[in-house]
Each structure stands twice: as C-alpha cells, then as structure tokens.
Length: 173
Image 1 (cartoon, helix red, strand yellow):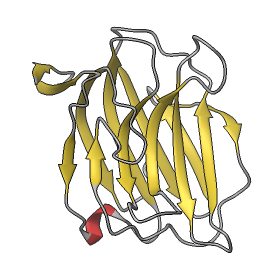
Image 2 (tube, helix red, strand yellow):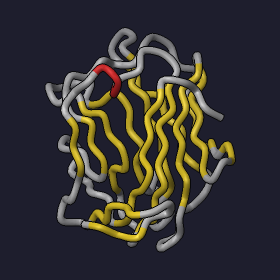
Image 3 (cartoon, one colour):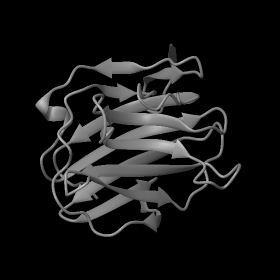
Image 4 (tube, one colour):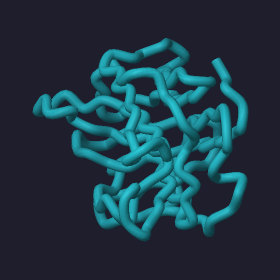
C-alpha cells in the first residue's frame, strides 16, 4: 500500500501482514561493520518487524533485525536492534532504545555494528538503554529472505509506515 513518506512516497504496512521481501544476496549480510536504517511512523502500539534478515531453516533464526518491541513493559513500545553472532551456540546481541515511540510520529532508526560495538540511534541520538556485552564473532550468514514490515519466522507485522530503508556495509554515525 502506498502512503506519504518522510522523503517522498512510502509503504503502508498494516496488521494483515503487508510486507516487502527480497531473495538472499551477499549484499544483505555484510561480513563486518554495517548500518541498517529506516524512517518509521507507527499507527498503533504493537510489536512489529521493521527490517529483518531471516535464516529460515532453524536456529539461529535471523542475522539482524530492527523491531518495535514492548520490552516487557506494557504500553511502552521502543525500537530494538539485534545482531546474531555465529560464536559457539550463537549469541544474540541487542540494544533497546530509551525513547518510547508515539503513534503518528516519524522516527529515524539506525542500527550500527562497528567492530565489537552495537548501537541504536533514534533521530540521530545514541539511544541505547538495554545493551548486551560487546559483540564477538561474525554475523550469521543467513541464506533466506530480507524482509521489510514483517518477518516470516516471527509473525509480527508492523502497523505503520516505513520509508527510506538503507543497508550499508559501513558503520555510520
């Protein structure tokens, strides 16, 4: 569905599992530093996948994701960036924003992996509040989908607008 975006036209994702999907490609799984960013405006408070690189075949379930999550605090939805490492029994590293998201408000979300650091920026501000240990190992090299708005393995569609998704193999700040 089309919508008015932050920069121009955007995609409206509703709870009925609207999503965009791309086939696996090496560019979707950077082997070192990376930045994933998007403009997001949610229409309701609910868990939802913004950007998701799925594994599809079993644990580990994803390479990375930016999600909207209540972080076990009812009614306090925040952005979260997760990065999955191939170390030992697989390890999830995550950062949760300190900014509670309001409906019908644009937020620029950027998840950055740089060396062993994992950061989440909201509107350009380092917004980490729930941080795991420094990352180690390399990102899980998933062979499945790159998805926007929904994750096949975590069926929580975004209810809102996503615009200007960008994935790069450099750590932006």
